[in-house]
Image 1 (cartoon, rainbow, N blue to C red):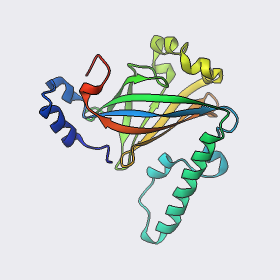
Image 2: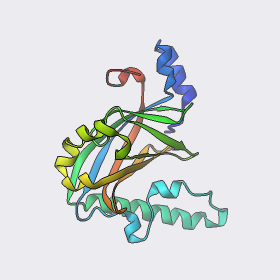
Image 3: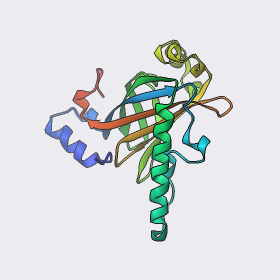
Length: 206
């Protein structure tokens, strides 16, 4: 599965008779998974390895290093899985996104881990989409959202200074971190993203 299909998704929109305005967004994603926090929810970086997202953003490996890179990737995957599964608290997470490639913006259409309606800037590499949510940029909308499920579920998330995540464009795997003011990792987000059509999005549709 490749999450880089402006041509394919544009064709789907045209075939479905979608309004021209809908084509302003080239990709719609529905992501579902888990948010993990509490003792045990340490990042793989704490154990000396990096997240899959960080690995994917690196430079292409030389051919003579392929075996080592493959082993490192396996270790990263295993460390991430251990971190999420060993967390004291785990809850269901969902995130619907609309991506626009002409200005590299991302709209949160619906979510229980990010404010609905929030617009983010993202970076696209050949392997992933990367974005960061900064609460101080969200204003009153974030303050209202800050009284919701996520913070009642795990009050230390009130210390959030950023939520950053990367979506692998080949596998659709989303990996994220909720980060505190001192740079400490408060929680992890692990999801699987699938492309969807605009007409499948929650109202109002874009």
